[in-house]
Amino acid sequence: MRPMKIILYPLMAALILGAWAVVPNSIEQAVAQQADDDEERFRARFARIDINGDDAMTRGEYTVYRVATFNAMDNDRDGILALPEFRDRGRKPSERRASRRTKTFERIDQSANGSVERAEWDGYANRRFQRMDADEDNEVSFAEFVAYVK
Picture 1: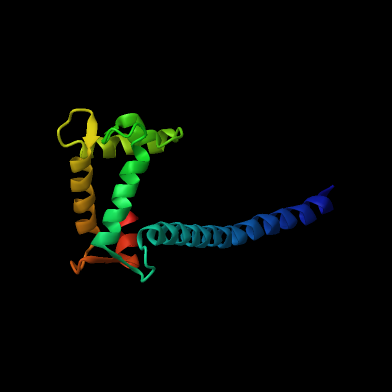
Picture 2: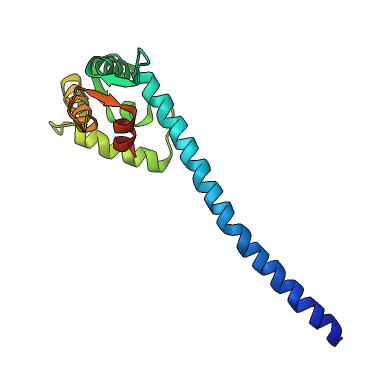
């Protein structure tokens, strides 16, 4: 019985150490994959706003985007966003996303009346563009966009 233990213990130790050696590579690969996925997601979002594809989001392009976004959320076409329109956007979001959207809605609702009028939305979007435009050149580069959304 003793010879079996002598062989088994080093074998188990080798397996455990081998598993530990693989874990960091797996973590690094997962982090790299997540970074690639984020880059793709950010690039696609930026491309939806950058209409002419010149890698610079102008205030005019952002205005077109923000008007289209408001109109898409305004399901009843009354020019006012209710919380469910803003939060749900046509489908039930996860609890985490619903919570984030509710907090954003409350920040946008400057009058605190439970709805977001177009003027409040425009003010929010203009402030957001200014924060994204870190170098204040009236254009948002992809790098500025990523720095803002991360």
